[in-house]
Image 1 (spheres, rainbow, N blue to C red):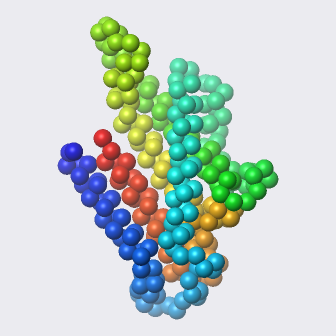
Image 2: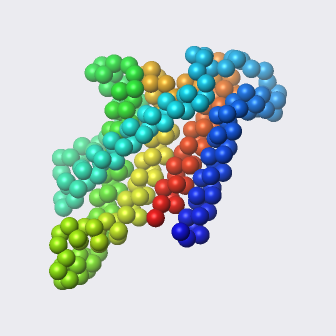
Image 3: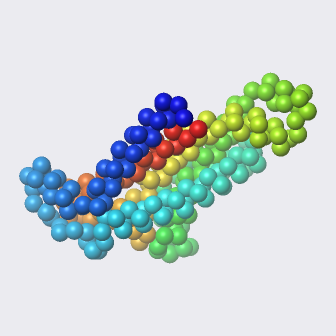
Length: 237
């Protein structure tokens, strides 16, 4: 492990410790914020009685499911269209990137109803675009000379993929995964709008009651989760 990866892991560890403290002692964190801001609580706890820890778990569940599906689907789209520049699948995926996640979420409701399913579907459709783009760019960035060298050495198609294409394409592909995961963690805030729970519950409760501290209580874990995910992926070999 190089020094750069060690620094990223150390930063992720610091963020994780801060997040753990916020989730373990939310009352102390909120009390400190109220004192610093010089305000009084507009709402004692969350409106639905759920703890911040439970909401964080719900948030992570939606993110994990949609990110995993987006990674698989986006990668398959890129692999299926890696040789052509304009195809039906890639064009459809690109079109999704211009649609806000809240619009995609709204369009899924008539079919799926409320709950976690519409949130996962909407986030998957929205998140697979950067994965597909980065995967395709990563594969196309592999120098043709490397492929020709592999063929000259008598490597099979599978060996060329495992020993040449994947190692050479991984850094670019990983960058796309980082963008997707951080964006997904942020966009998952909207999951609470369709009854999927998550940290958006605290965020929108704070907005509704004009409670700045409750708003901060919801947004801070989201920021920390995004930072942790970004640092962990950056440290990945």
